[in-house]
Image (tube, rainbow, N blue to C red):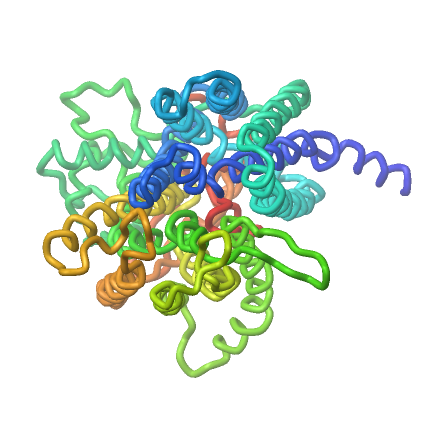
Length: 595
């Protein structure tokens, strides 16, 4: 018995394969956060960009880092597979980091100044943004590919894998926001960028060294492309009706225009046999079954909720930009007994991560059970709504802190270093509140998009979550020049966000964002009041093939057969349909910036 258990342990992917994936993720996340956490300080102090320009550039770059994962997921799902995609984009990622290091070394060792090579720096940064797009959506799903869902031991080990996976992400993030940020500001920016480059090189080597042990699933049709194709087909083909629906199905008339993508033939329906591609145009004008269109409908119905949560990420973006800029104007000295050190302003973002790690167990074990015992049902939409409220409160607190800082600046209370004599640790409250808002809004959004989509469409709902983060970053980047343009010409006090924040009104900007988010909350409440929950059954291909769970796939106003996504290769049905960009059910409480 003991020998069999040790044999099972030695053959488990958790110990035999996953260390290569976990080591890769730890090093890659350390590299990413080692770059992005302190980027706005680099733009200000090294490139000598103005405060508004530095913050705008960081927001646009960060937004791009959340768009490219959609490209990476499509490439992995439809063309290269996850292993080749991760290796290809890791190489691109590493090239970008090496170019960034080389540019800094060039400026350090020669008479070339940073203004002359600024274009090289931005090429390096957007190469990195492209590289992270192939890794972020695929590594966790690739880890899930290594486990056989039919093996009880593998199922249990997969839970352990995701716990380790998320822990390694948090370790990488904390090291980056403390050690790497300190090296960048107190020792050398060049050395501070060599560390992420070395980590990315190590991540690539670790992943490559496990190539002979990995299970690789061949690429098939991307669910993201399926949604786009069905929507395009529905818009370009008219005249379909639901008269031909299979027995046992009732029409869901929301987004009824999608029915125009349904096939018109009356061939008997088979869940695992999509409409034949050999059918002539005369006998088959449409490409998709009613079940496939119904799956797409479940994703499309999330679009209004997607729009209602985009502005939340505009508030979240302030952590890596204006919060850091605000901290740069405050006293960063930290004294403990006879020991004193300067705390880099960007390191305070670690309080966001720490608050999430602390608050998630409190929410799951204490608050959620209490709320569920109440008279009114506690729903995921209410959770998101609470998160949006907390986000506005975080902006109000940031505004109040800025008001006090500006008051001290007006009174001439500065340190010998020329910053306002107000401790940077006053910012802890706004960072913690943003973290608390993530526990409700960000994780609630992830849970909603995950639970309300069928298995085969989960990568699409995850893509919506990532896209909302990207749009929030772009909006944050556009708001700064827009507000400055308006306030410069329409107010007597000039720009709210000048290069010297002591001469501006960053507090007004924070209050304005809080007000805009309050308006967004009104829109969210309107959308939420009309939203109808669907009880979507989540299962595996094995269940579908054996006919289990077909009739109760959706239990609300509509009952629909849950059909797996269409595949180009029959042998791709060997494993559970875990697609790229898919959030994992075992641990949905992953902090938003670490997804």
